Amino acid sequence: MIFILNSRKIVIGVATNNSPESMPYYNDDHHETLNGRNTYTFTVPATHKDASKLTVNGHVLIQDLDGFSHLFVIKESIETNESNLYEKTIFAESVATSELLGVPVRHSI
Image 1 (tube, rainbow, N blue to C red):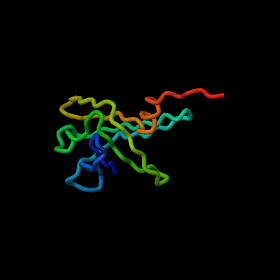
Image 2: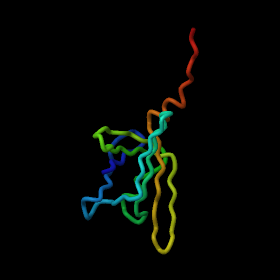
Image 3: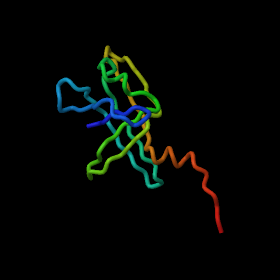
Image 4: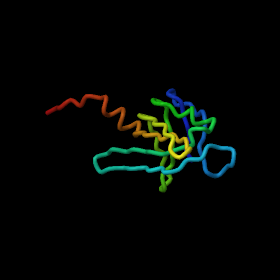
């Protein structure tokens, strides 16, 4: 299940594969690296009414296999139309990573 949040981190929708009326998602990949980079990529049908809620600078919240929640900010959204299959692919990175990249680190002795 993916919770969809707006830029103010308010829940505005849900994507799940367990309900026939909800927006399904697929090709999802949660990737964590040793250097702390934490990304999440997934695809939804662009024709679903909730697909428009997935916007750059919006957020998504997922739970990993260990039960930990991860909040991501959407950095890129790409819509494609191949073989009459209209899809929207979302590229997001951890809010913690985004916030740390904007903070200068001061060296102290």
